[in-house]
Length: 516
Image 1 (cartoon, rainbow, N blue to C red):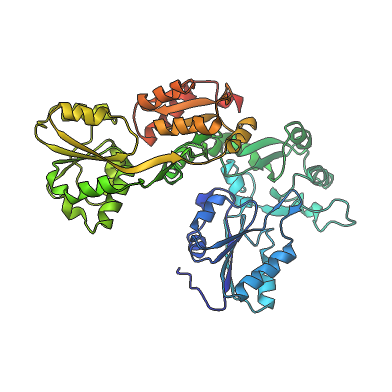
Image 2 (image 1 turned 90 degrees about the horizontal axis):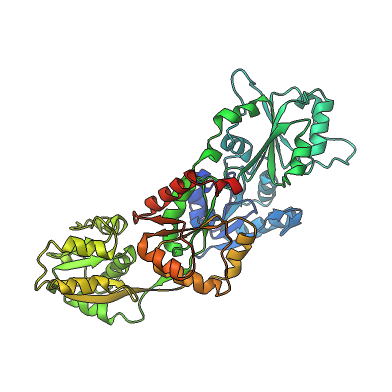
């Protein structure tokens, strides 16, 4: 599908899925990429907003706890107005727009005003959320009938639109938005012949790492929900299939399920770690403490680029160094042909991948992915009279260039980028800490530690139940110097290794999931 922009404007009414950003459809993504205006609801995963182009305008139209940013009538009028102004509008709604999503009302208003529109279905929470809880809505030997019901009816109105006697005969019932009327729902089902001991599951934040599942029966679920403080929004599943959860539960059995893991890496680099954490069920919390910026002065790097032919080795100590080196190389009107005859060393596999993606061979990756590992690898080579270029951060340890010089090499260290404080506010994290949403804080470099300490302030005390994980001894030493106790020190200097160390720690410790 290729989304075409039109002079008269068009509205795409898009289902965003139940919460997990990975459940968005390809067609929906293509519509988002073409949007001039994006109008989105409260339950939409904000990760999906990244698909919209930079110039797009964002309009929040969410409803939460009865608090409406815009009324439905105002949203309808807004869609017409934006399309008539010639804009391509992406109307992003949670779940599927035509299943209790009022998408039909919006489409009707557009049709009445001769505005072109298209419906892009979404994965409805009515199906996806029970699936993530390990509950199949139909199953041979259990039931072959299922019904979807809105649980948002006002119990005080004279007559319900719901045929409770008919519903009581259906094998599986799925109520959306039913928490507030839970007592009325259970009462009506039992009154109309549903067995009080019928299994029931309430699922909150379904398909997300914060998913909560409460299992009971029609007769006791109201008391259980009150006792456990189970708040909306949630989905209610009624039927014998709920018993299958004990066998089929898969999502909340993931190794790191529900653990809040803070990522202090720069925002541009956090995605890889966040993806790995999500795959293991963790809830990644982005709190970048540093930002990566170009150097204040390019002169040293420019001078080195002008005499590239004089170097025998080029050493990259980070993926950031690779990025900015090649950006500047391109800016100078040069390309990879100017690297002919130069051997390349990368500190680790992630940095090496950055080089290999440019179809350039990496000659050396040390066994240990730190400066000491590079020195160990070079110790077997004859560096006498060799010229080595190291493009790196403005502030870094001198152990590598000094060690190479002791081996007889001439080393030029040039600034390719700098790390600066991200400017994030400590309140963003303290609110989550106070709410008990943080279990682990990860540090992947010394600069993430020092800037974290600077952001949080001298009086900050990490809650005792929160664990600290570091990659490598250098980062760990910086963290200890800053006053943090290190619980997890990862020896393999990769994001995959860090996530595996969290899994190993959790498997061998009773102090993480047991307190969730």
